[in-house]
Image (tube, rainbow, N blue to C red; front, side, top):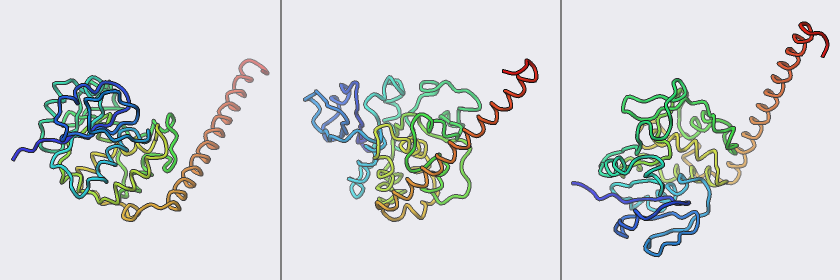
Amino acid sequence: MTFKPFYCISYYEGDLSWVELLPHDQYIVYAKSNINNVKITNIQKKTNVGYNIESYLTFIIDRYENLPEITIFCKNNVVGRHVSEKIFQKCCASQIFTPIEEPGKWEQLSFPVSVASNDGGYLELNNSWYTKKYPPKYFSNYNDFYSYIFDVTICPSYLRFAPGANYVVAKENILNRSKIFYINLRSLVSHASLCCEAHYVERSLVAIWSSNISEGIAMKTILDAKALADLEAKCSSELSQKGRFIKMVKSAVFTRFSKLLSQLCGPI
């Protein structure tokens, strides 16, 4: 049996004209800014936090007991920004878990930082580079996050994901995780619009939806205010220690360079 997909669309800005062509009962738009288009009827306004990841998690939590057989999770600007219309339509016809991506469309592959996987998808070196641009609140690096949400002892060297977090997902893949797991993820990404933890989740969706890795113990109960405060304090301490270490290294390098320069050129 072939199932019609349901579109979970996260909107911030840009084009929505393609959504007008969808039957009104086959989509929902989570709007994180104003939409001036009366032709789009199924809209839920959201606070602008957690990128599109927070929208997806809200959809899953709200409909966990009554999920569509196939859900297309995407941003409203997926076509053009992430994939061509041809690739998008091809992916949307899938009835199985499918990352919506187009080789070479999003990032210029540059070994060893980014490489193509054996299925033609995107692999990124796991180095938490984005934490410098988007300061984390609960986990100072990806490995801390990964080993918290999953019951693992070894962290990945490379991360397989679709940049932009656009996916076709069957119901059974979503149900691979408990409702509490998704509730906790939403708590972790809801503290800011440019949320570092959302970048962690983006890089974990393939593992969340298509692997048999067990959920971490802490993810089996609702994260309350104390649990979140403890995570925040731990992250803050680790970032502070890292900052002091970097400052110390820079100071040592500068001192060494100054001494060397003085030996070569005289006092400076």
